Each structure stands twice: as structure tokens, then as C-alpha cells.
Length: 245
Ligand code: FPP
Image (tube, rainbow, N blue to C red):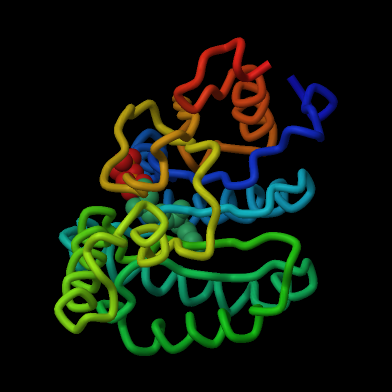
């Protein structure tokens, strides 16, 4: 399976990835978990580049969950530093390749220096249009939904909106992902078959793709495979096969 097997007229508009297995990759080699994360960063670079080449318009990566704050402090600090260095090193490349940078999640929990830098990268790439790269940072889908309920309750209480008018579009417009289309293809690496509190609302009709590859081993040809699998599926959105044709 290679690039020539991909139908260029049916590229997913939004690909989301649960990048899992950095720790196991390192352990298998007798290395510290941090080495797995460092290697995982190289996969991020490759996959962003590949999405831009294929014409995927939106790529969302689960980089740090709300639950990840519970990891040992040393690992959390390492991940934050790695994120900071990656952003600093890649800002120019993002602009050169016309890539817009965005985040979803509760940034108020991030260290100040990193929060500020994230805002700077977002601001400096906001006019780019080839690909939107969104990092989920301090992100949890249930807490995202709780926030939506809170915001909407306040709006109902203050007569800004009537409860009768709350529909799927209104909810969508209050999620962190309000500017993104629904996820077409969700990929999880490392053999786990779980969603782990990622984009629960947004994946209602996504195609799910699970691979045993650990994230640091995930390369362009693995993304090609995932997209080819996506293209082989019939997306019916609840309709019958005949209605689709
Ligand atoms: C999951 O592997 C990975 C993470 C929690 C962090 C993701 C971070 C990166 C890919 C590094 C660089 C990213 C950016 C955006 C610069 P795990 O640690 O849960 O692995 P395990 O399940 O094998 O322990």
C-alpha cells in the first residue's frame, strides 16, 4: 500500500490522532519514557508534513489529556518543555508551509511561559490556510461538554438564548472545536482500542482506525494505510446503502 493507492478525490477533511505508545516504545529498548516522547515528536513532524502533502485540511493531535496531569511531575515537566522547544523550533516551518496552529483544551492549567508561547504561535499563524494543526492540550472531552452546559445555562438564565433553541448546532458552536468540521477519521496507535475522553461529541460519525504500531514508529506509510482503510468504508450516516448511491 502506498501513495498511489490513495484516491485524491476522497481525502478525509479532518483527521484526529490519539498518539499512544511512547512509553512502551522506550521501555522495549531499555530507555527512559522521555526518550519515547522525544522520538514521538519526530512522528508528529512526519505526519503533519504528510497531511499537508495529501491535502488533509485539519489535523488534531491528542498531545496532553486532563488525566495526564496526574503523571509523575518529572514527566509532566519534560512534556511541557518538549512542547515549548517544538513550538519554538517549528514556528518558522509552520509559516513556510502555510500551516495554521490552534489548540483545544483548558490552557489556564498550562505553565504561564508555555501558555503565552502557544498564544504567540496561534497569532503568528492565524492567516495560514493549507492545513489547520490543532493540539489538544490539557484536554478532556467530558469537561469540554460540562463547560458547554455551564455556558448555555448562563445564557438561558440571562435570556440570551431560549432553551427551546438549543440544538446540535448551538452545542457545536460552544465546543472548543467550533471552527473545525466533524472528525472523519480517528486513528489510535499502540493497539489500545479506547477513545480515552477524546472528542466524544465530534466523533459521532467518524471512521475509527486502530493500529498496533507504537506512535514513535508511526510513519507516512502507516498514515497512507489508515486513509486507504477509510476510503474502503461506506459512510452511511444512518442511511441505507442504496440511499448513498
Ligand atoms: C502517549 O504515550 C503520549 C503522550 C501522553 C504525549 C504525546 C507527546 C508526544 C507525541 C511528544 C511530542 C508532541 C508534541 C506535540 C511536541 P504514552 O506515554 O501514554 O505511552 P505508553 O502508553 O506506552 O506509556
